[in-house]
Length: 163
Image 1: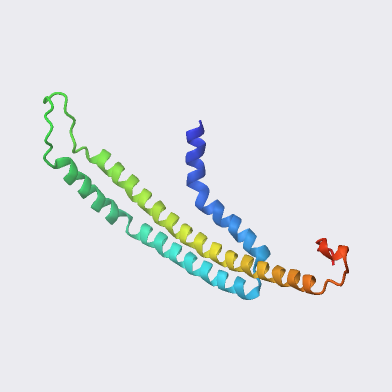
Image 2: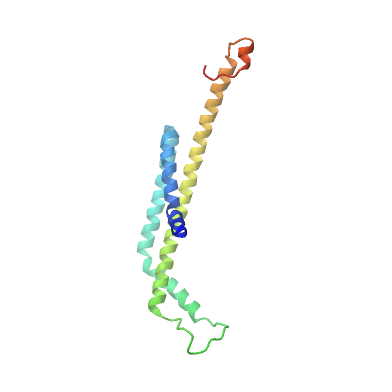
């Protein structure tokens, strides 16, 4: 059962991670950073639409190419000897077509997952920049508080950020 849950997690991980990063970006980014993130997101969405359109348009051609490759692999000379009655027929058209469809669908999902991963990296980069900006701001505030600390004697040696 653990392997099934692991497979489901791996299947949905790229999109769920991307959604988490988008929520985090909505909280942290300023207007300029948000515009650049939206622009990048729209470009990735256009790429996704182009991949889906290409997949739907060229599905039969892709299946035919993969079927031909599978037929060529099945018809190649095999160097292991099996008795005539025990060997299987490598030229079952329906099985080859089903395998070809599965391979084409898997390649399409893989291509979409790559786009999701690239978008996740771009979003993470924007978030890292925003977090760095926030840390620099906090450092400046802390430095200012340290410089303007007007306590004297022993009180000055204790750290207080309440000011």
